Amino acid sequence: MTVTSTQSQHPASVNNVAVGRYHSDATAAAFTITTGFKPRYVKVVNVGATGLASMEWFEGMADASCIQTVTDGTISVPVTLGITVSASGFTVGLNTDVNIIDEQLSWIAIG
Image 1 (cartoon, rainbow, N blue to C red):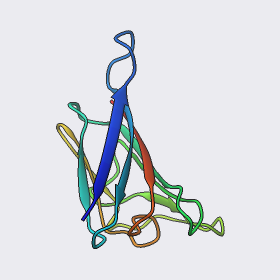
Image 2: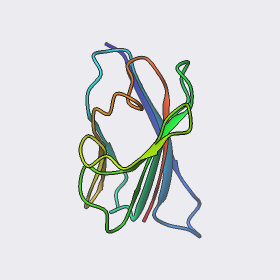
Image 3: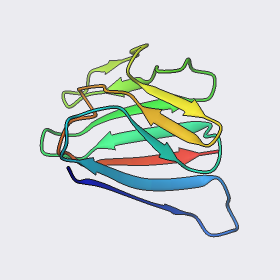
């Protein structure tokens, strides 16, 4: 199993912004990213071979929900398997339209 996860934070002038990438060639599963702050906005984009698909979560949305855009441009608001924010990061659910095995996910979290 190979899991690759990278992230960086903006210089000290702007705190609470983190970006990174996530890639796993193991069985697809929910995963957690630790940012060190509670995000107010999270966007996860699949930039893999299947095509561009994304999930967005805004402060005030329910846990495990998101606004989802899939490859053909269809937009939906699933209430499960989306994004759940915590005090120090976020979890991406096993949303099989975006969180796909062996495809790279790029993400941004803003606090």
